[in-house]
Every structure is written in C-alpha cells, then in structure tokens.
Image (tube, rainbow, N blue to C red; front, side):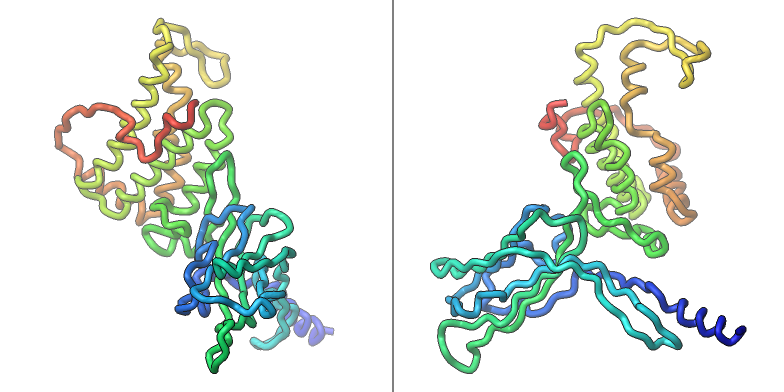
Length: 329
C-alpha cells in the first residue's frame, strides 16, 4: 500500500505543469517576400477586433491561399502525467474560426476571425503558400509569430499579470508593453482608477504618469530624475486648478472617514483636492516600492534632493504625458 502511495505521489507531481508563453517567438517573418504583417510580431496591445493581414511583394498562387492561415489562442502546455522527468503532455490551445481572402491586386492575404478575440496570447501560422512564378524557390517559407490581446478597462490596456517572483528578481521588474511602467503597478493603477465614479480617465492618466516617474527614479535615483516627478505633480495641479475655477471657496466642517467625529476645518477647494488626488496614496507607494532594493533606491533619491532649494514651477498641460484635456472630464 505504501509503495502504491509513493507511486501515485510521483505521478501527481507531474500534473498540470504550465509552460510560460514567449511572445517573441517567431519564424520566417524576415523573408524578403513579406512587405508587412498585421498585427506586427510580438505586439503587446492588439485590438480584439483585429484581422490578420499579410502583404507580400509579389503575387501568390490563389490555390495555395485556402486554409493557409491558422490562428490559435495559446494556453501553454499541461503535463497529463510524468515520472522522473518523463511523461506525456497535451496542448489546450484554442483554434480560432474565421475566413480567409486574397487580393491579387495588392498581394494581400487576410484572415478575419469569426468573433472578437478574447484576452490572451495568440499565435499566427501562415503555411503552404506558393509564388505565382515557377522555380525552385516557388514555395514560401512558413510564417509563424505571436502577439497579445490585452484586457481593456475604460480605454486603458492592461499588460498581462507578471510572475511575482520574476517581477521582483530585478530592480525594474517586468514591463511587457515597454511603456516604462512596471506591469504589476500599471495593472493596479488601471484597476483602481479606470472605473472611478469621478474623473476615471484623468485620474488613471495622472496616476500612470506618477508610476512612470517613479520608475525613472528607481532606475536613476539622482537629481536629474526630479524633473519627471515634478512634471507628474504639476500635471495633477494643472488639473486641480482648472477644475477649481468653478468652486466658490469657503471654510467647511470636515469629519473623519466614518463621518462620526468632527476633526477640523477645511476649504471647499482643499476638500476637493483631498477627495480627488492620486498622489501620496500609501497603497500605490507600497506597490511601487515593494521590496528592499526598491525602497533603498527611493532613499537614495531623497538623499540626493536633501538640502537643496528649488524654484517654483508653472503648471500647464505641457507637464502631462497624456493630454488629459482631451478626456473632457
């Protein structure tokens, strides 16, 4: 009985071992016959309603077009059973239904999915194509590449959830969409602010700029990085002062968060700022500076600024990395 239990444990130990998905994996995408590929290989922010489009530099044989495009949503591999490193595995990739067409005038092959694509990693394979001209190089080498369709909240595209261990192995962590913001921080900001009852897009954009500036400070905790933080702060106060033009200031009573105890007096404008600011959120700061190495970089930055006197700055839309005026909030 004990031997049987040991055997079962060895078998169970190999179950459901998920493989990571490498979005950069590609084959045959650099052929001279290819003019362009849409979505582009390794793209991290593909729209759910996209079509697969390959434009070629010369004509293709129409007969080879049928069933040449395969689109799959990747889920990784799952090991069904195994022992001592051996076993059988199966893929649970989801094949996407759709239709293909070819424009002989523009040499464009297009695959249109039947339904919008769900969030996830996708792999395109274009195979068995033939050039119109005969010859030893008549066959086109198979084309294979990947891209990512992100979750979208109120217009903001989220990177995939990073592996916590890999994300904390380096100072700057994982930035899948290469926008200068660590993925776990970006996801937290969008989930926190993008559906906020008041000014969701503006708050999200300002918080993302603060996160971007904080990443710059992590990378280079010196006086030179102060300008990024200043711009983020000035962008927020540009928005504050713009919104406060219609607020008639007066002193009002303010209670604690439970509305149970009077604790002070505050002007209407200050109360509005307190309710709508995104900086100095302790949860956001803890998310950004979430381990010793990152906290130490923040201390280095504070030390670099210590003892200096700084001139005042003028807030303007030019301080904002995103045109928050365009949101109309």
